[in-house]
Length: 249
Image (tube, rainbow, N blue to C red; front, side, top):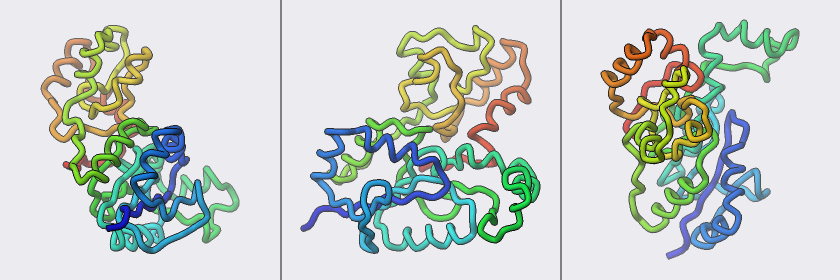
């Protein structure tokens, strides 16, 4: 039996999550040794229509991209959404808060009506096709990526955290940023990043998406304790949470 074939594709994104893969350095060589990378535009010129695992970075912003994604899904036994743009729509989904014609005029000016600049409401990958696994974050945590891929290559199911960032903060002994008047999304956002932002004195911005069953009551308690409103919390959720409904993936 041959090695599993892996193909990496990108849609609307900055490709920063793929850069995190490259940043694995020696560990990346170990992963490549256990698989055949048959397509990866950022690292090789070869292309292939045959692959077992498809890794997708980026959100879907055009109808033709939906069709391309559907074709990729039919060819892949396993599909992995890579990074916030792919898993929840990411920063790209901010445009869905506005009229798309206005967005195009703002960005492209007089060229807004050019056919190649056509756009549609941003979608996460699982709003178009079935996603088997997600590597969360903006950018992803490269160690988490390596863990998930290694599990799949070994035929094991990777364990994705089902608890909020607050758990990691408490485990590290971090001071609660709410005490410092920062509206942190830690109570409702999926852990797995090691509380990277709060550990650096910055609030959680929500790039890993909501946990499947967030403790809404706990979030309300925090808001009431600090004399804020739900609207204030919602305003902080827009950056990575525009129009996205969490799934069990």
